[in-house]
Image (cartoon, rainbow, N blue to C red; front, side, top):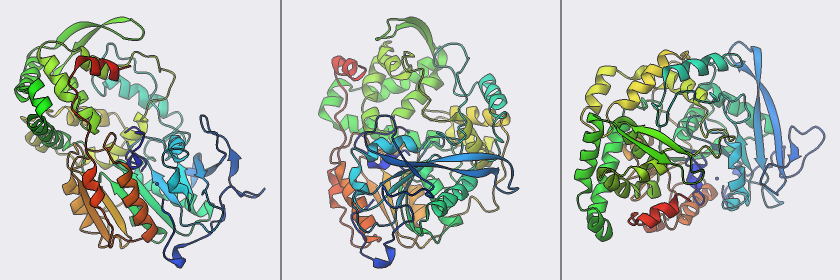
Length: 506
């Protein structure tokens, strides 16, 4: 999950943040490491991060990779603290938990110095690269040597090579969520905080929930966006949930005057192009717009569907799909390829997700819970098929599996105030999951936003999400929250014209 420009909710990601001032004097605290105030003995030092003019506070906390044995290799956890903007009493800090799993937290600092600066008005924001991400012993697999573009998600050789590489620097069984959340509590104590607020998007919600179970006392409040509970069995339900989101999207296209006029048969075209690619892959030459390099590509049904499934995560991505589907049905896959493959111009940048960390988490916490026969039954006949389950089950055969605490997949129970957002259009973490989680959180409020998908990038009136979240964190309670403005959050228009698509690729 990537960080959208005006979307607070990706911080806890994706998405996915804190309040104006606390109403409760007991909730206010002056942390040992106060905003922009350090001493020679402080664990943090003033620092500058690339692309950020503001001076922040940085440090590294060393923890044992194997927390149980407390022996062997140590990991330096990379920590960035964003100082509060005021100079007076500070409220409990916000700890931002990122998604993926495998996305680092510290790159989100730029958003807290710009669009989301108000969240720091009266409190600090703490960014900790979870073990296996960012600068905390990152588990990046490196270059994929598989030939061709649009290759399968997890080629066997890629997974095997990744494991061999990373086992030189890591015990891959020590990167699960429960272990990482004990790390997080070490950071909290290291920084001297008694109470903290948590915010998470997608996998970040799982991390927050696990922290709340393992360390309930420090939790002042939590904000969860797109809940991925510990019993989600990802990616077992990816296809079913995406099927629902795609059907809602196509219904909206049919009810939209411009979209229905441009693509009156898009539902039939979607089925037809999947059927055609299932019988025979599309083969064509593609010229990258920037480099003018020409390559030969082969488009298989499963990869085509998976790329389009990922676009359902955001409203702008979803509203490009009728355009892409329509042209693909006419034999024109250029709009799809512009979306699906990179020209390699940013090859020096790290990938958004550390694949090694992703596999260490999912191969322990999700995939072992999937019954392959059940997966075949659930996903049979869906638009997206059983592709993701097959790919990840195979990858996990070549990845070491960690042990989890007994009862890990059981519901998390907490009395802390919890604000939960779900999207009606979410293709991966449906609102029903959040409803189940909220049933065990008696001081929670679950809000379903009509046009929100998984990441609310591109919705109008996104500031309403800020307003509601800030008010919740100020109050430390869900009671009496005014959420009416969330109904004003609307999606962008459907993509219609070719020139619009070309412009969006620049």
